[in-house]
Image 1: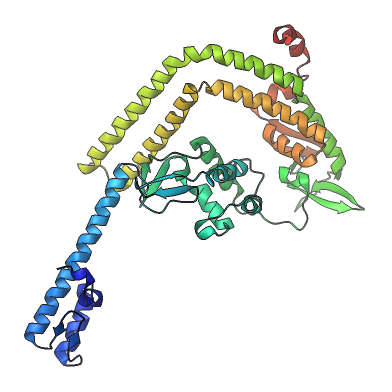
Image 2 (image 1 turned 30 degrees about the horizontal axis):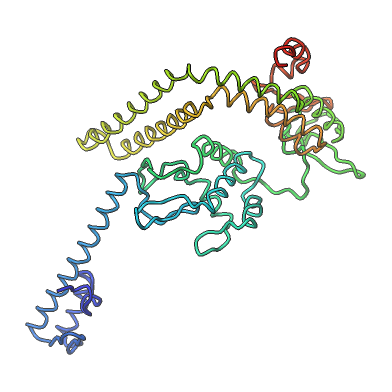
Length: 418
């Protein structure tokens, strides 16, 4: 008999609720109980039968709960996400797995790409993506907090966390771990920015005074924007600097690392040739990566055995397992890059050359905002002293900023590139 469909099953599903029914029967508060299928009299036999019905109901609920937990554990062991699919994925009823939502996955990837630049807030991303048709469950537009949840979810690069433990998913990832990590760095660095009454483009550079070390602020006087030291609790004598003067200095810095469209095309073609010639020589590296991945699989299996033996605690087991899984995912992505012929040196060189071309575009457009963003890419630790801007240049651009941009190099390489 299936007691899950009886009225007594609905009446009490645990011992506490059952006792709350039987106790009023003992005191005569409840005279009798009538159900669609049978009647319970308030006597010893009736209360005994009710206790049996309650016990069978409790057994059914406990067995059902245990079967559900067993099913979840089986899914987790296979790397299958056991809950409702997040935005960007769909639940496949046939395979009981999650699959990519072809309509929303491109939006998810774009969200990560935009946020990783550091140029967009969550609200700006929301206003940019939602009008394109991005919706969540029940077809409602996503809120800012939902976008933050998406950006923090490692499931999108193939790893998920369930009840404090990390698992390697078998679903197809939407983004790479490298892009995910970059977004986490931006989120950690950004924190909770303060809102200013008026936006000044160059104040985001976080410049400091070269004399006293105080922060540089901005203000408007007679229609012109000036940057100056805050001079808090100090007798700093640095003068005001016009925004146009700083913009001219920034433009001169960017010109040193700019590369026009023609030269960008020629260099990229040469890099492509070099890449093709090194694809064959990269096979030993691919084999080495595969060996490291296999070694990590063995470490994960050994880690499980060690935990079952009681040698390490649950917290240590979860921490080490998370490290091994993330390292394995990173190696797998690197291996995929090699297999596709897009090894690290080529991607880095291509990105570097392309960034130089973006510098050229920033100057051509005359947009101070884009020039400021590129300056942040090539430098840090900005100091303003005697109306001159100085900064620490990043390694890839340091040589270009300290020498003439490409003049000698172009003459030497011109014949080869043509």
